[in-house]
Image 1 (cartoon, rainbow, N blue to C red):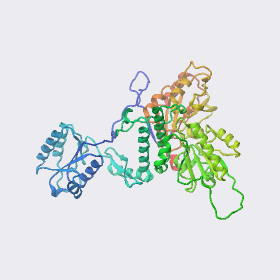
Image 2: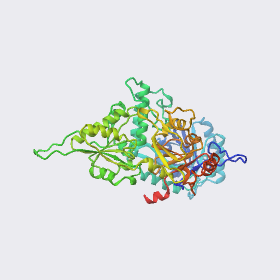
Image 3: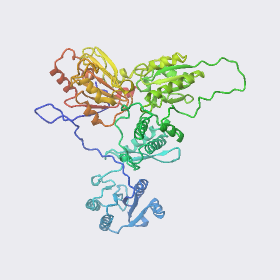
Image 4: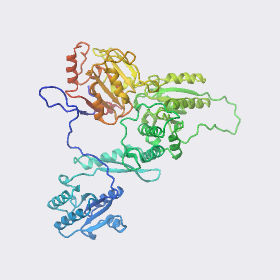
Length: 619
């Protein structure tokens, strides 16, 4: 059974003597390499004087490029180009009366520019031009001139002559200042239709919150401050330049608990890891709310929850009358938010968030789509578990819940999945009980069960798996854990293990591990594995492979999408297409390898993107 909308696969090997698949995906042509260029101290040359030429000139000016426009004369200029020329924003160079002179003039200019020209954009080949349209022969000669000077060129409506193309782009506004933000998006259909590219761009823009530009500005300030206060300008490619930093594949790699002896470099790395985490987990609207003082507190390393509004719950209410009504009794609810998608919330969880809560203390992994159902009058605070600071932040969060409950508030402690499945519910229950509050535990749909089936993987199946084990990939304080050994009839589900995949795979497969590291024999390398990221969410991704090849598969797909889980065992393949529920009947290793080869169709891995159409239509 396939549960994906889009499937990316390894190419079938070409050899006729073996069935060994190629280790890396074969490139499939037809795409573009999408780049974003900084054009400071560079020139953009535009040939033409129409409204399209003005549009190209404006985009180049916003990219800090100087602009040179070749035109047939002042009387042919559109109003915008004329105005920008009059105000010194661009330079005009008149072209001759014949096309042959144009080509000589352009090539002479490019030759004398000593490499300062980034690219040439020829706009007077636009098919809708009623007069003055450049001929195809002239365009070809201009193309030859640019080629000889090694300058990329774009021709409107002549894709066969283009070295590059423009995307249908949008630059977002920073709604806090009403100025353009640094966030831009671009969509291309690679020549298959600019109209539909524009429509898709509009749909993307409409789907994003209006505060998205502010959120990007806030993250930019956080990144700059985190670097300035620690590494300064001498660390790698972050040295005060404008280059995009190379991010870690996942922000959730284990870190040691911070100490008072942390060096400046260690402290800065922790801050940068924290910035990466909030970029991944916090809602865009919450990021946009952050002010300068919030950034100061966040980067100081001090403890503190981050509120979603300016409401101050620490201030008691005042009333002019001396009412003698009994004080309100506070409550604490430990609530599971399910695997991610808001449609999978239980009725009890939805009621707790929408009818009962005065204060919601949320883990950072709870998706913004779930937090969005909370009424606006309810204060929401997200646990700021700074890398290396998780234990201290957990304590502070518990104290915040108790303090609010003592003031008569109903506090919802919101956790992803189910609170009792690696959610520290037990520690919190014991703590709250010691403070005089008996918490109410509201179960949630566990990610360990829902996540796999959204990827088409059951955790049990007759004829394949008679039992399953759920375990964590990391122990208390970031330590390793003892994993179960291989049993053919059992499925293994590992939560919080994708960031430590190498160590997990070694523990599962290493034949020489001592008993304290693994409880049983090692796993064969051909056993199926599925790594499911962002389970139940629209951007869910599942990597199907085997234990021996999954590391290469994960490197191939690029950045990780936390949170992720690992499913190991024969149920991973049992519902693929026509299904295979004879695993426990056929136990031979040769049969297993044939089974795996048929499942992966001779490839080393398969990547499934998104939810199934059936689920999308249902939700």
